[in-house]
Image 1 (tube, rainbow, N blue to C red):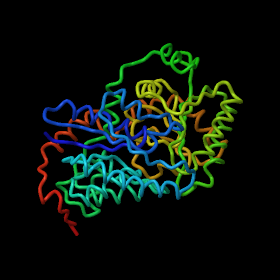
Image 2: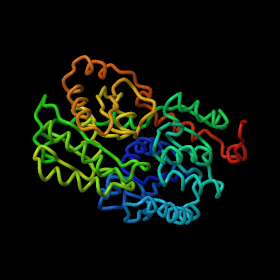
Image 3: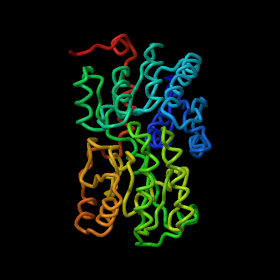
Image 4: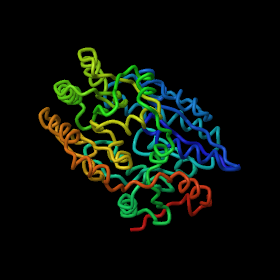
Length: 384
């Protein structure tokens, strides 16, 4: 029996990991447990661990998120998480640790796995994003992890340039696309009933997800204000999903609440179920904000994206995205373009997709299960 411990700390990360979990459980002689930590266990972010429980996975809760809106709070959470994760991993004795991306749980898992001689499989490494601490964390995890699953060829090449042995690097695509592909289509009547909205067929509406940037924490509230002011002046129905748990999010949430109270066409949610979120992406006129979903998932759906500010800049992207600064008039101009410009809409619907075909999870699981756990895997060599 091969035992896998997967670590997840936030809703967006679980959305990508879930198809991989599902694939593991479809295999014989494999045991999977999910360590659920960070924002998953916070009522402020919707207690999203309940979604994981509802999906039927065996979870272990690890409380680490401090009630803080400062950079120091995130740093302290890393220390708490390392201590708790060390105890859990030492007790569970897994064969593999599985983690994704560039957040606290990524670096803590990589550190614990390296020190305890347990191989770490890392998903979505090699990305390049400017202006956020996540970029440095992601590359640090790459240097600690034992097996790499980048989403694109460019990202895989970047990992190899970092001195990683090529046999460790497997370009597989983005598992989030597997989840999108599998979601059944839901009608607007069903979605409106669940969300308490009144979106009509063929009515353009905006889906907004905006997160704080670690290098611009002091500007986060003002940046959210500019975005919400642009939306309020245009008057399109807008569904807002709260930002992640990074420093700067408290002020952003207060701005969202203020505009939701003032304008009845704005509706905000702490989080949304996966099936609702995917179907909103299928039906919305555009994804607005700075979420990685606009880069990684939207091309698969042919969805137009307006990315505000520096978050996601220099990340590999398709033709479906327009980058704008935190300027109210430029945001309004971009929104109107993606809603009304038929040629741009056509380009988006036929855009290239560097992030895979929606069948990544099988590739990931096949490779992990066929990789021998031996000294060659555990004792990493630098190629330069």
